[in-house]
Amino acid sequence: MKLQITTMLTLSKKYKIDWNKPAAMMLGRWQPWHDGHQALFEEALTRTGQVIVMVRHMPHSEDNPFDFKKVRQRIESALQKYEGRFEVIQVPNITNIVYGRDVGYKVEKISLDKQIEAISATKIRQEMKDEI
Image (cartoon, rainbow, N blue to C red; front, side, top):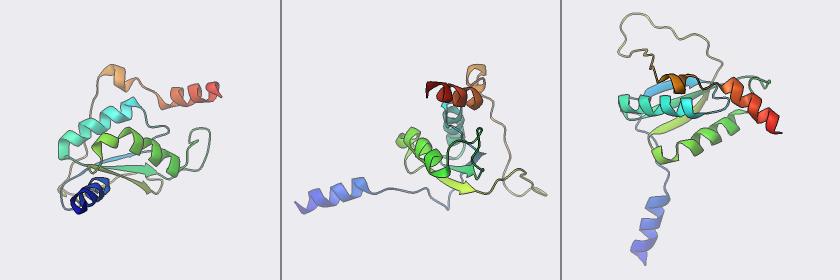
């Protein structure tokens, strides 16, 4: 019985990424998280094995209908099978990413196929509004 309880506790433990290993960073509003974001995440994951998904703090508006809690829930739900390989954090409304000399990381644009890149969160939000 003791072994069974220990196993159940181990399996239910929520694992976190390893902060000592390299990670990719994704920054966005994710309003809402969609298949294009998912494909980008999966490609980023191949680069380092773990990803920090940064959610920009944005005032509520037509373009930003979801608060951080809802955005995080949607992302975590979509990425369930990657548990322990990502974290979702809220950050200020970052609009500029700057760096000086070679500092040990790279800024990389990942190109996905045209069908994925054609996905529009604006269109998805409009479809969501139309369904109400």
